[in-house]
Image (cartoon, rainbow, N blue to C red; front, side, top):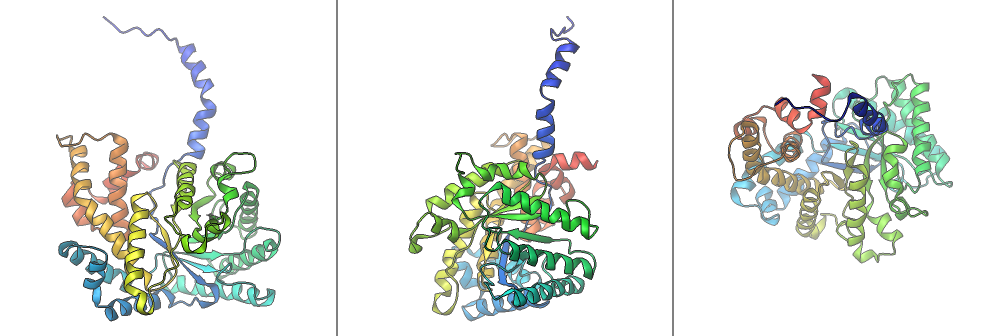
Length: 422
């Protein structure tokens, strides 16, 4: 007996009409992750301390700290890694610190720079543009690099905009902008401030004949007003839709946010309940939008007699963030790089065997202990792909474990992207 549907073509057309606005919203505002590399950390440094050798200098200092404290074996012991895992992780971390010790660098004109007067900051902004352009041309710049300028509150707005202008204009005058250029807008409290930033970078694109959308920016979530607004809504959830496609990331600011909620200094932390709440709201706000998330920093620095304790704390916090879906965080000192990469690499290497087996079962449709849905397969593929992109896992290991190469893995992790390019 032939199947005869009851809904007519006119009925279906009516439903399509009803959902046309929804279709446009999903297509424009929820494109999903674009599959590009996300750095595992952002290093913040006062803007006037940057030079083309900065990343290599930090890598050398990080390696020297490891050597002075008993080598990578000692670091692995402090982070609770067994012998087999420690060997694989240590080899990769040593290579990482020698070749690419900083994945993302922010030259700071905000808290890390302070108020030195307009002449000094003008000169520093011009010098920063020149130094970044030189490092990019020489191949010594980190893959992602940019500045954090002063916030758009009334007292610092003009200064922040002037620094942003001088830096971007200097880069544009020097030639092509660095591919991984990132700009950071701090201490955001309202949607209007983000819309103002959108206007500013749009004007800079026009003035310098840049493609529309070339200048994307991060928003730092450091104020409670961005989590819960005066009308009871969540402004942070409105940001992706107020300036679609313009925001690249939301970065949680541990100490400004905690202090705004009157948390005593001793208890301000990335793992305080107020931090977890804010970060969960941030996750909900950007789910499906393609905007990335970053956790904040710990101010317990591995120096002097505190290196081992600080490494243990930092490694635990990095792992905690990763387990909660925050794949990026802040680092403030060269000696934090070893614990950052050791904890990150261990996370991906420990999870690889199970993820690879489940992904192989999904791809080959074989019977396994778990029957995964397509959404879970995407998550498995994305996990493995992140491990490859940061250097924790080799492409050969992925092929051996999953039976798929990196291009196939990328398509599994980001099917919408694969469909749009096919």
